[in-house]
Length: 475
Image (cartoon, rainbow, N blue to C red; front, top):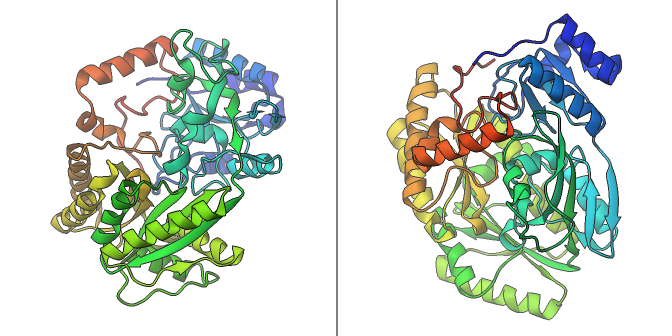
């Protein structure tokens, strides 16, 4: 795929649009914006642009479309699928200046925000109004809402409350042509034409650039109980998940962590005051929330009764806010702890929750077959298992070839169990070679056709989701 790389004349034009303070061509910027949290991959852009208004985004895209300059839109840089890597160079469009919460409409339980707002900042702001925005990925303290929209992020509380798409009513989007459109309306029901809003959510910056979003909010639940349940078997921990739901209970969170994930995290975060028994091989973090304490306690009793059937050890019930914080800190720190140990590939597998035991067992068997180690954790209530394949001492050939074959088999297993390739991280760059496992060519052609309608010249985030890409380069 050939694109025009911005030269001095192009940079000068971008400067007339943004001013010199928001156009960057220095090596430090290329290093910062040429990577995200995906493995150790780096791809330098030709120029970094930081627009601050929809009009500026429009002018940039209109110019790039006319000059065949590719544009990669970037949020907080916390992605794990390479979705924000500028693999063809060109323009890196950073949305960090779009950082305003424009309106909180308490009468209609809605908020209008820009995509550069940090997820946790938005959550805490609406909590101050007695409202709740549930999607909370583990990187919520640094990720942008725009990135959450791009990948349809979920997080621990998706099991009860749903994912990003379930809270989006309307978007302002700049198309590749520079045209600015609205995709929906500020209403809870809308059967007026095709649902462009939901099409944009999860499209990973390949169809347009989101510059504004209207979110639906819900009342904030006042009460919650948190427990940490240990198991002597990882398979039993996974099997207990479906059993809890069959009992008629929907926790607000249900997270799985295998032993090694916990051990690495406790070494990484020495401030967490949690002890793990020598025979405990996995834990479930379970949270139940609501506004009726008696009902919450009844649900907890039922959950404990179910857990007893799966060789569960002594359960830690969080009695204080500090204990709740420690338990959640343990779960939210796992990814960072794994990364501190080794380069790794994270596969965001998802299956029907009752198939989790088979998935986990299969992942371990495939690892033995191809000689790699995996550390697993994830949103068990959704059937969403994050499989972290650790490089460790693997040589280059094993890392590039044997592991690739192993990942392929993992995805084949996932699809055979009724699941798919990604629950919340997106396809991006590193997952796209496996799309043929989940989709027939006719389905992929339909997606490519949609991309062609929105972006005829293919300038928006090229090489992601299903387009052929050049060989990966790494640091």
